[in-house]
Length: 85
Image 1 (cartoon, rainbow, N blue to C red):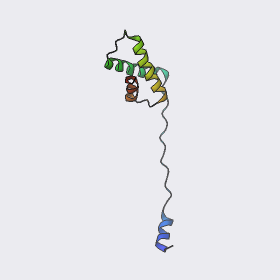
Image 2 (cartoon, rainbow, N blue to C red):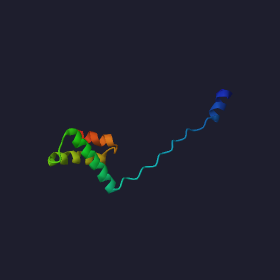
Image 3 (tube, rainbow, N blue to C red):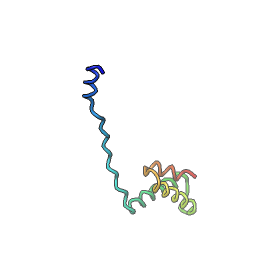
């Protein structure tokens, strides 16, 4: 190996692993219920589902709740889950 290349090889540092961000604490049950309720209300309002259509609202709420527990908890992800189906 050439001396210049050997010097360059010796001077390189191993790459450092990136620091991991701390995992946020899961929301408390009361906060989770409130967040889900707000999303359900927004989705039902957008779809024109009245408070009297309880079966349809329950189906929307169930889809949003399942998405909340299994997937990303971003508001738009929850809204998408409520609109699908």
